[in-house]
Amino acid sequence: MVEDNVDTAEMLTSLLEMLGHEVRAARDGPEALDLAPVFRPQIVLLDIGLPGLDGYEVARRLRAQPGGRDLLLIALTGYGSAQDRERARQAGCDHHVTKPVEVIPTGIRLDRFKGRDGERFRKMKGYQPEDQVVLFMGRVAEEKNIDFLMRVVHRLKPKVPHLQFLIAGEGAAKKHLEKMRVDLGMESYVHFAGYLSKEDWRDCYAGSDLFVFASITETQGLVVTEAMAAETPVVAVAEMGIKDVMASGRGGLTTSLNEDEFTDAVIARL
Image 1 (cartoon, rainbow, N blue to C red):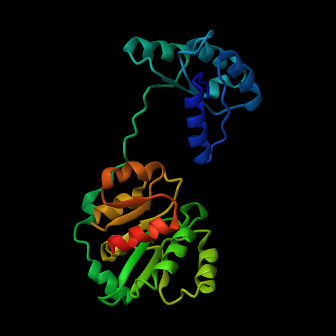
Image 2 (image 1 turned 180 degrees about the vertical axis):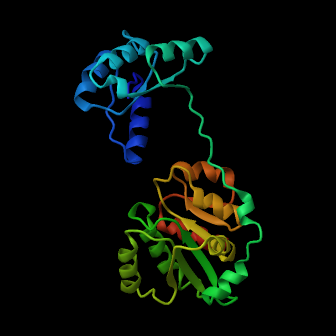
């Protein structure tokens, strides 16, 4: 990344590293040209309005370096006219993105939720009418923070006697969570559904009383959007993409990453 604005560079670096990318930041053109042969990036986010050596010249010189033809160069700049785009293209940029960058939410197909039958799913799983089913659906991985949800559910059970927690999905964290279920004595009210068929997936959302989500690294929040499409209320930690999806209280309640606060929000929605 080549960006002379320190705040912007730090924010983008943190975001990209959180998403699993290895990032190096240069504050100007000469630093970028020195860094590129050592770091050997695959992608370069390049500000155009740099001090001294501007982004157009930096792009040309990066292309001229060994391996420069294989780089994906993205101009990330406040210059957005047709002439600016053409200059970026001629300098060797593959793409031109104008600041500020607007996040466009990923859509889902609402027709997939037509005909949903939550009662069918509840009967299939053996839930009773009085049971209050709290659902997590998604990849069962450490970064999804499901152990946080398990602790919240453990605290909730004495206050909500008919509580049932359903974890739908598979992943590397399942064994850890199964052991946690035993260690906390939660076998009677925490269940693992594994992967679901298309019909069961839809009806699982509809048959649940509440959807919960505590990941703090989510960029899009598709499962939260799916729960909302099934008209199932949501309680989620307001971080990254979830904060945008549930802005202004859409679909349910958001909290910080605090077990007391999250527990109170679940009680309020059940």
